[in-house]
Length: 365
Image 1: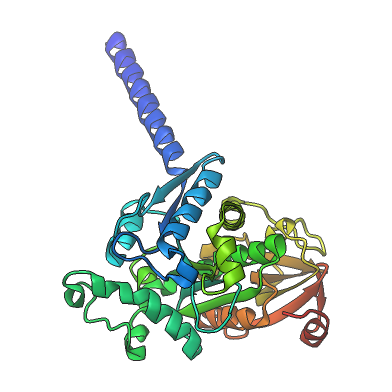
Image 2 (image 1 turned 180 degrees about the vertical axis):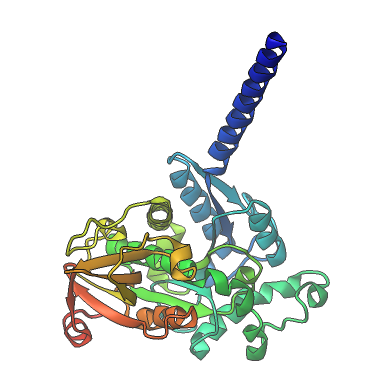
């Protein structure tokens, strides 16, 4: 009897060992940060042909170089919607990301305009604030006309109708705050590293972003219709530089959400702000309390990118970070919509609070 009991115990321990080993192995696999890189256009869809260049080729080259940079890091898995010159419909691009359960979706493009416009910009899904943003989205969305049965596939979506765009924003709403963060980080890298003209983070109705179930950003790397910028984007140097900046933004985002850092009861932030050298910045204050609350999304109504400052016996909790006042107002709306009705924009200089007036007069967005 004793031997039987001993055998049962040993078998139980052995089973638990294998189950636990399997669980740990599974966890290790799931620790990968998966990025889907989407080179815009391809195959029968050349994209814009500014100055004779092919948007589809430039987007593909930059995307492959971004992937190469990311794959130098541990625990990053890169998936491409295309790795050669083929046509992939917009719905399929999102489907690839969703099936991979990706953490991030980045769609890469080049812009065009009838003027001599130049500069790099990033977009998240949302209602266009002006006609220019609508025209950019309309141009990128028009690729669906090259697809069979697009009316049924996209539920009657019409790229030429501003009203159709309204239906796009609902599915990505849960990921808007994270999408803004990654877009802002990529934009910062373009400006600080490459001195590109800052066309800022904007919202517009890109259908390729609608069906993705993760933070998603569309990057307009520059204008092929601008002679100087087109030549730069078509060059090996330009594509390498742009890819490194995009990769840097992605890595900063990955590091921020993987980080479990908390502040150490100091007057200065010690969270994500360690990754920045900005003298001036804005945050959204969402709450204050005499208690120290763990900086976990579930403690703050699903909001991410949290931080706090302790002043005497009061903890003030903040959401997001940016230097762009227009973007800060968008973040404020997000906080209010999440339930923080008394949220407000707070300005900082070297980690110390200053008034909004001081910020606006001292730092030019």
